[in-house]
Length: 364
Image 1 (cartoon, one colour):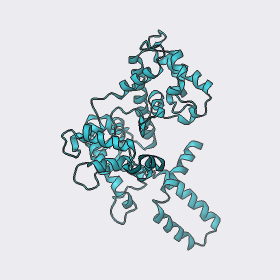
Image 2 (cartoon, rainbow, N blue to C red):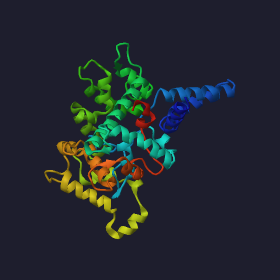
Image 3 (cartoon, helix red, strand yellow):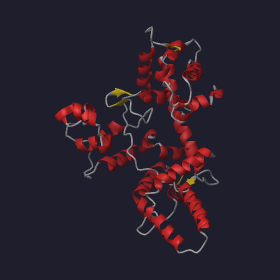
Image 4 (cartoon, rainbow, N blue to C red):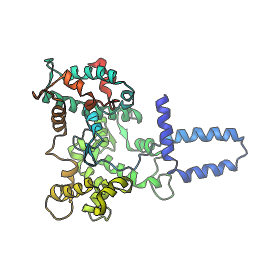
């Protein structure tokens, strides 16, 4: 209950600016009321918490663009430097990060040993590349299933175990009104229309409601073949500022390097070059790899190949990376001792992103 309350408070804080006009109307009504001020305050707080809890508007934040088989919301490299948090997410999952953050190195190793025993499926004392790949894929699939279960429980599914669009809209945006001018949903017009379009693509039988399987496709469209066009549409909407249906080199860079990403020390080191080395590297990626036909822009097919790559297996690449980083005797496999010796690679020095795997270790 404490966690749920804190979640509500956090959502409330994020929504204060968005709901300014609505709050102003509420305050105006309160000032004209002769009801005792303490009662008004109590009613106002209850109203706000209830309204926000029933209207958890998703934040319009910049998203990581590469979707297919992505193992973490973290980038594997940050400004050219290896980011261990990506490895932690890939190996452990992201759900229970706060729990593992508090563990000592000793306790981290004890719990990591439990994971190693689970990965070693044939119990030969060695973790092979296929076993590590299997584990990383398991963590990824577990995250998707757990996230879908959580969101499904959070919404009011029908007696036939389906979810209607109106119920989803009310739970997410607070109202079922069409987002027309004058409607309380008008300020969320773009977000509602975007969700409704994705909903229609996920609704395979076009009955206006989603099964749990269809709802998973709605939440994680990158995992469903028939949803890929929607992922491309949404990427274009986010990045294609001039609306020409393509992504230019500058639009590509603006999406990954905004004003908030400026690093004064790095800029000084670059002198007159104007942008950090990692940004120049991204420009080269755009020209040499993303722009397949070399026409100076990304079309829909090139965008899909960028954000949903078919020729790159993240779990395989991560397994190779972890083995190469921890394989002290260079025999191509990992012993439990080698993994525990490199526990900071797998779970971090203060251990992050331990995931459901450890909190549910009784299932092992």
